[in-house]
Length: 233
Ligand SMILES: [Zn+2]
Image 1 (tube, rainbow, N blue to C red):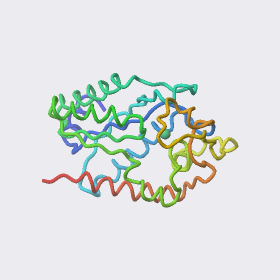
Image 2 (cartoon, rainbow, N blue to C red):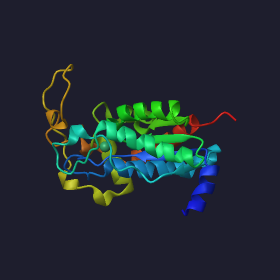
Image 3 (cartoon, protein in one colour):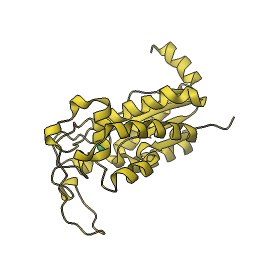
Image 4 (cartoon, rainbow, N blue to C red):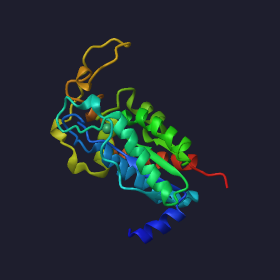
């Protein structure tokens, strides 16, 4: 878009959307771009289906860096510190507001971003008067994922492996997929870094991935999120 295109798109949009990913290790079989790829593909699904729900979404370029301090012991992880990340999100929202965006929507695809996002949203709504909605995508799919995959499908496990196999199977190292090896820990333990939890870097069992099942989950989750984003006229 040129700036003139952007001006009209901002005017027309019900929500200006910031897809939020990360650049961090995703075990031995997935690339460090997993969360950013998910942020891009799954937010595009929302934008494409939005007109069926009488909504218009304007999607910003995905933010490829997040708060990933806990993955730093693994090579390829890039993190912003939590305060910097919070500021980045606020400054993007502030720019959107400056040019007439009425409503901001953050779509999130990395759990580490959640706490800084909460604080950024407080500032955007209270200090910058920008109404902001928050979609942590996985929360809208959680019931179906748990029913199918149990409790351990999180980081680089059944869920994320299935999503990458659905959109870009060429990026998955099939020969490196294996059930992830967990270190023993007590329920009350607060881990410092992800290598306190797991040997390979992931959770769950990536060999149980199912891209056909995940395509159904994506379609249903997309509709569920868009129903939630309805605006009272
Ligand atoms: Zn991830």
